[in-house]
Image 1 (cartoon, rainbow, N blue to C red):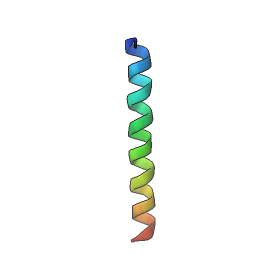
Image 2 (cartoon, rainbow, N blue to C red):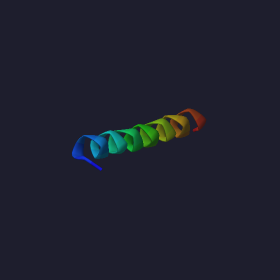
Image 3 (tube, helix red, strand yellow):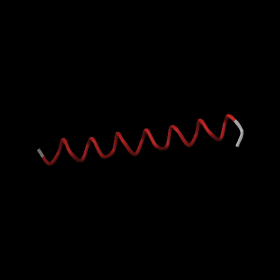
Image 4 (cartoon, rainbow, N blue to C red):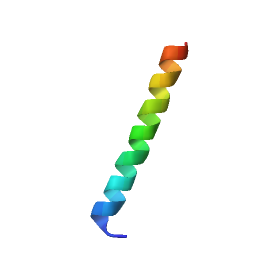
Length: 28
């Protein structure tokens, strides 16, 4: 896995975390 691909994977995971946090904010 090259560095660019690893960075894209990390950014995707961060995006997932942000999306989950947004859902939690709307629930509470």
